[in-house]
Length: 146
Image (cartoon, rainbow, N blue to C red; front, side):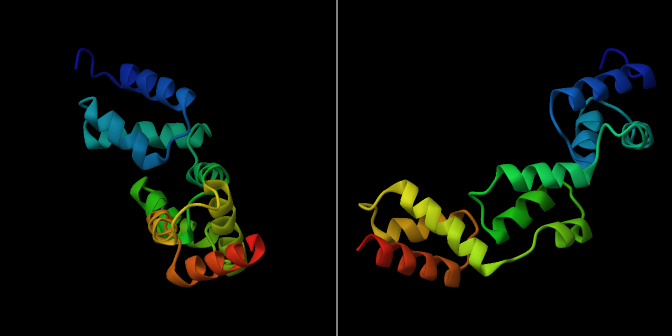
């Protein structure tokens, strides 16, 4: 690292958060990868959070609204991987069976009527939809298209 001063690390962090929405953990990891000490990274994250430049709740809302193709399980897993706290995820990502079935059905319709059921199962499963949701979405979609 050329310049490990607080000022240069804070400038780097500012450029990152203006480029894209980040969680606190994502920002901290990037600052640490730049060669910062743990305490310096924490301090910069605190400053960014106080200034409203990072906000895990805002990140969570944005992620949920832009990833409608993901099921409940995968949504939770992806947010955890990005460093969003379990309590926040629990309060924001709720399992609604009817909503899940509808979103899975939309994906099935988008993929087209000729897709093999086994492939549908695989695709929906990888997207984090649970067994009962997949089964019901296939049943409803096939009933509607018959």
